[in-house]
Length: 199
Figure 1: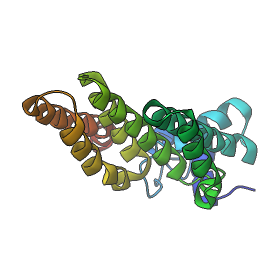
Figure 2: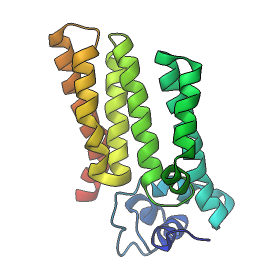
Figure 3: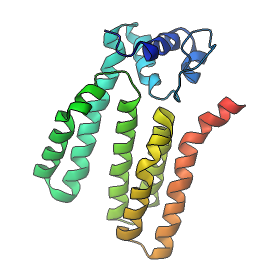
């Protein structure tokens, strides 16, 4: 009932030590960290701190991330193609076997998928109108996704940039500047934790 016991041990350590929580350590003494950046562990450890450590308190945040991912995907698709298409997209996401497994397990993929979906929503909003805010939010979400599962988060960045360069509403110079901001926001979203670790 503990899913991946490797990450479950890190969740347990995070309930006993805030230092182990921050660094994603597998033990409360903060001797060694897990093999990923720790953002995906934080919701589970916070839940376990509030409700006590159990398989339920550890895995419910993963399920809630799945619900949020489906909801955000629905909202994203609905904005462009209507409620029917949004419901279809959400249903396909919810019923895909790998998604059903991923959102009931304690691997980093649930947080990664949620944050990348948030990034996609922000890009669609940025394409709708000339808005620096949505571009920056897209970058920040991908930067935070990096803290969930490292470089896998960056797989969507070329697509995000290309979509905005082709379909963004402002003139080309401003679209290029917005793509630079997308990159800088992505770096900012992930580098703060890396710098603290290095220090």
